[in-house]
Length: 179
Image (cartoon, rainbow, N blue to C red):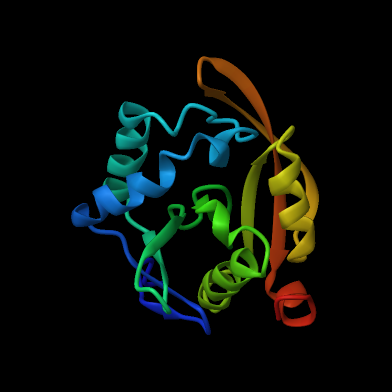
């Protein structure tokens, strides 16, 4: 699977993240309210975001999310390493949007694009969400994500944080609210 194609939606374009996106993407990410309930609540800080950005470039699969009307970068997302979690699955995550794009179906639009591409090659996509991140948990439920019994623990901002895992299968995507 090509982990960095250009994906076109009605209002958004996802294109491969490049080093020159730093300034525009950090301008979005420096809004500390984006990260207020996120497990990595300090990601609005330049050194923390710089590490996140550099890891995205090195790891591949990362996208800049572009508002087609304005041409501006409004967020980022990425695919994880294929089958890093298990056979037949790929992770989608590391996603954030400028707050003015919260609501209105923007999250669903870019996730639909990622899922349509990934589920041509994998049986399911997984999404790791901070267990206490009610905004992201609600967003996952709204796009048809099914909460699994799988969990993970990661160090985030100096504390251990529990994560839950949602999944969307090829079959549920074809039938669900995004399909």
